Image 1 (tube, one colour):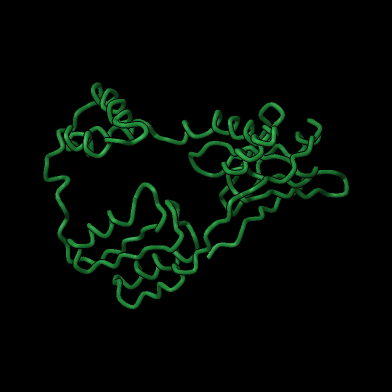
Image 2: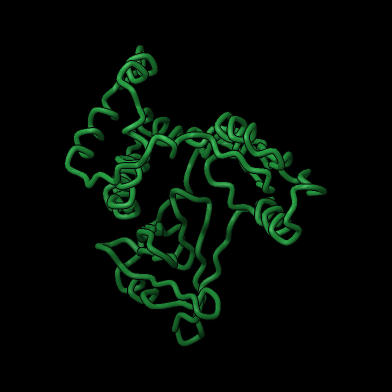
Length: 258
């Protein structure tokens, strides 16, 4: 976003237009709204009091708009009649590993810290510079060691203090124009790993990458005839061809993570 604002200020709207395009084709299909409303309308909203809404939203930019809008959606949603006890703290002496991102705007560290008061054998780890997505090898290793040992004792958590703070992305690579004939050469199914395939298609004049799982396609923007970058991640795909020109495979280049 800082890069898009800066570019637009300098009368270059390419990055801003690209962002608008991405948000127009992505996002909505990634959210399972049926499950989302079933949880929200039954496990959250019934326990929110009007005086709490007024107090918390007072002086904010959007006020109580979101809760009013979602309450309207919940008005016609099936009622599971969840009891009040559902939102009471869970008391347990079982080992529990709590992971929080220091900069997570949604599941803030305070929430896990409050829950830890009732989980006597829990360990709360706050990942330095971490946000909502903590999918890094460091976290995976910690989680596996916790599951294998069945205990929070002796976990080496030093790696969570070495998460680098991502720098502002000040510019994307320069996008070049690729003939439709060349884009069509990359269309196909590729094996990411045994049993896991990804597909590459063309949407208009944009190459689209379909990751595994129920997620939307990701646009790929060319910086050369064989190398393409993603806007919302620092990943690039590099395609390789035989001497005959047949595309054989691609390599995904990703930034290093801890």
